[in-house]
Length: 366
Image 1 (cartoon, rainbow, N blue to C red):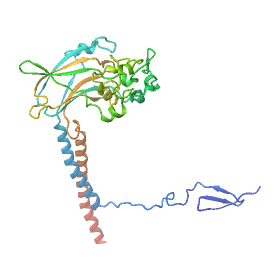
Image 2: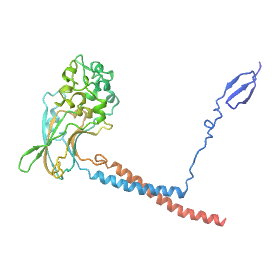
Image 3: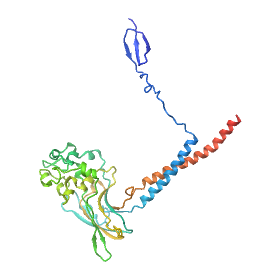
């Protein structure tokens, strides 16, 4: 037997064999990138660079955090839980007796008192707890082509919608678990005038959805201003709905797949406790409060059962600011980070003052 002899590796990473051939080596090619010879910048951290950075971050973040926290606290917010778990609750009978199979909706009335007036526009939200809209199968259970107005998807929904794609041999419009579980409680607000008059508060049903959702992602089949009754003929409503999609609103610009209540619900929440915009109360006069201080009544048409998943329902009244709704987390985070950086700067300054002087003295003696 003749043993092959190997020569030194070439610069390109190959090994020459005495027989005339080459073998591929596992060594990376001899380039600046693969051999990690690219020029790099590595900062030298000294007390003169680190300490000012800590103090600057602290002095910037703390006042920003205080401003965000104060702004958030200035936002007025009022919450009414109308789940009806307690026997003393006006909605107790509704919560105990109502289910998806109930043929008659249940109505309950909750009085409440606002101890301060709401001056600017007021945003009405509904809130749900222990409802996991972020479940993977739940999030995928929709047909975006159908919701965008595609005629073929209207007749033949996506398989992702199963088991809510067909019912009684008819395609469901809109299909999927998200649409099937749409929130359908009706909330109405009344102001109780001191003279005993019950004044209804106008609630705007439009302007609650994102512009891109209503004009880009969602659309009715048949183009602009179609006859929705004819367009959706041959389809059926979702199983848990009380009426078909083309009867969600009397306003044709807010009906069908472009109904804003429906669009808001279809934007799934990331956490099990969430709120979604329900209505807007616009400010009518600069001299009169949108919601004056006083007694109010919330009338609820109880259509949405939550006992099956041990959930809770609530109505929230809130104003907003330039930073959005009430959320103190961002301000607290800025204050915390700024305080920690400033504290570390002080500690490192003390250490540098003591140990730095000691090292300088040792150098001088040497």
